[in-house]
Length: 210
View 1 (cartoon, rainbow, N blue to C red):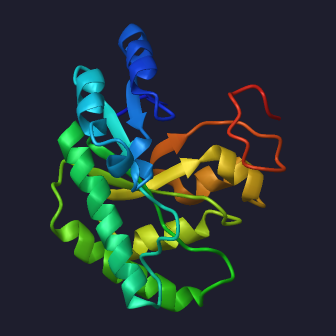
View 2: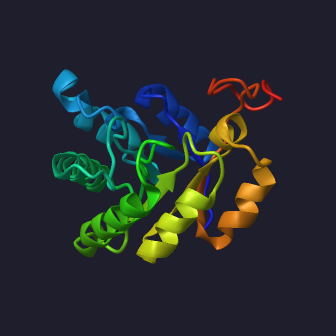
């Protein structure tokens, strides 16, 4: 299945109009902030009203301070709660695609132990989920594609794929972007396009970077 979505930068009214005019889908980003429902009690209703007629919907879930492979059980528990939060709102909004982060910060954990715990986390998490919803792990700070590849191959589940963020790969990665594509291959299910100058994660419009 191929689809194109427009990241909405938490502007549902404006972006819904663009999506209807162009036939694009939408990536809903408001719920990447877990405090959003408390700050905007009518937020879910607003999104349902604006995006109800948009056929392809994705949702970006929370990611700050979360780690499925943490050696701390309480952090893994909070991570699960936040990922369940994303799944719940995705279901309410009719989103079949959920973007999450793998949570590994390079050089802060022994990778082997983190990978084992992350694999256990994802197998348990996915066991209870609707097979019509696919989850995608996005790269952020890592230097190459091997980390996400190892997580996905360890879990080996059809509903867990890679979200290749090309801007992050260009800014934080060492190999050229095409090597990320070659490394992940068919594990890639979702791609984020944005631009930067290679010095920071500026999230510029396409064509404004280098």
